[in-house]
Amino acid sequence: MMRIACTLAPGKGDTDLLLFRVAQLLLARGHRPCGVVQINSERCDGGACDMDVQVLPDGPVIRISQDLGTASKGCRLDPGALEQAVGEVAARLRADADLLIVNKFGKHEADGRGFRDVIAEACARNIPVLVGLNQLNRQAFFEFCGGAAVELPCSEQALLGWVTEGLLDAA
Image (cartoon, rainbow, N blue to C red):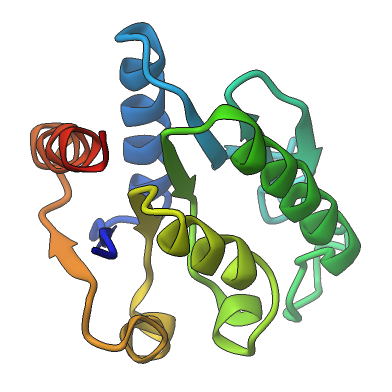
């Protein structure tokens, strides 16, 4: 049975913080999550924040944003860095993971790239998947899941409850 859930927090960066906290709590409880959580760093030059992802459970931290200058309005995602993160996660998923966390089903996933294959592999292996979502790619995510995904409230309690239930079901 495919177990995949998503959450969408209302504020900018709130989903990232929530997934980071949930990952830390799961690690402290002895679980073996793999995936990525996003950490944004404000810049002193007033430009858009730097975007880094921490590969779970133990790193590395990979900068996935490019510095395009303070006046730039284009997409700052570094596709090469994203694919590096995907490769790191894929290797950990095959090792000993009991859960996959993906910080965001973004444009690359909506277009068939990014973490899409890793998410599919986890589902095929009966490993629960927890994904951060934004409104822009919400429809593409639900189409990708074929109606199997559950949307969870954006709270630690809701996410931890779903994960715990999923880990018991997968055991």
